[in-house]
Image (tube, rainbow, N blue to C red; front, side, top):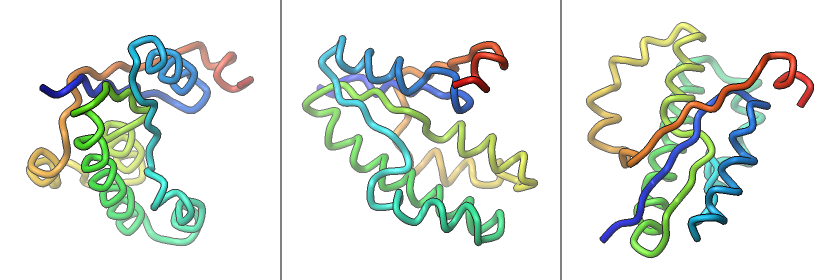
Length: 129
């Protein structure tokens, strides 16, 4: 039986990483952050140097890898993830991408979280962090 796959979404500084780490510890789970480690080194370069379409495809590939990693982990332990597909979709929609064209692809290729939560806080606090 699979364990839960819990995703926390939210803007930078909202507290999602802190909450995700504490929740993972509390439930005996694994804290997982995207993009996954094999993509993390290229992240800064991609964010600065490529167009929005290429950037979106990079992050989708990263999420496909993350999905496969999480599938293996949830057989043994719960997973609490700091950002997943909703953050990627929102950021790239703001950049002008028609992200909804890929919904069938995403639904077929990415593990669906058992629970997703949007973490928010006041802008003043978030910007201070």
